[in-house]
Length: 81
Image (cartoon, rainbow, N blue to C red):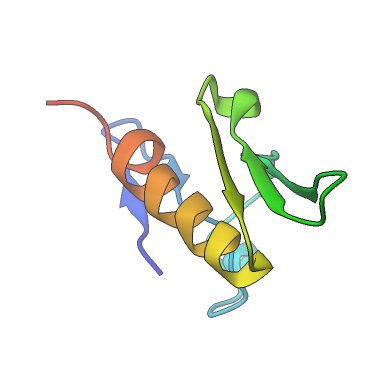
């Protein structure tokens, strides 16, 4: 689990239960994406909550979830230089 601390002291991360984030301070949790099945039973990742693309379709939900995390880590979690 990556924790990114901004110069203002805010912490960003992709939520997981690896550590108790409430120990850091007050939480503000927001949705980064939706991973949903389509009519064909394939999985689509919709990253519109963070102004991202739609990814997929994926045959397995686990592949969609990994793609979601990969995209969020590369494009949302770490600030641009």
